[in-house]
Image (tube, rainbow, N blue to C red):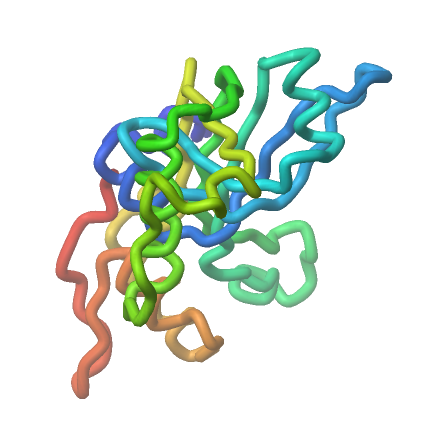
Length: 210
């Protein structure tokens, strides 16, 4: 079965929701020898663009100055599905439920102090939602001590695999196995799959369509 279309995230709102929840993304730039350099970064998604803060010097900044075409991705492994879920003798049946977003875009440096301020406060709000800090102001010297990288997307592609390619009976059977496996991520995975866990067991409350 060709799963490419089924696995595609069609909702831009779901993509934004995912990017707003993830704490680590990876930016890829092209180094001086033509090789991709991929670095994990904290990031915030604001006004339809990816923003990251960085030191004012570094290889990725040099790369961007030479070539502003970049890649960016964020992903989340929801649940590893051991092969014995299907067949205790066939290791090739092991699988993973996941969500991922891949962006191709143009990288640039934010110079405007107002935009820098918005980005840095956006990063603080994302990573420290409990507050307890003084918001950054445009006249603060800290703005001169950091670089802000902006990735303006040219294409955004999201993929997710949470059982949407299965019929209701098989999806329920898979959910039951995930519940019994009882990993640290099981309950959150089941919620994303459209299931509710209560005293009576599992209940399907939503179709997993993004």
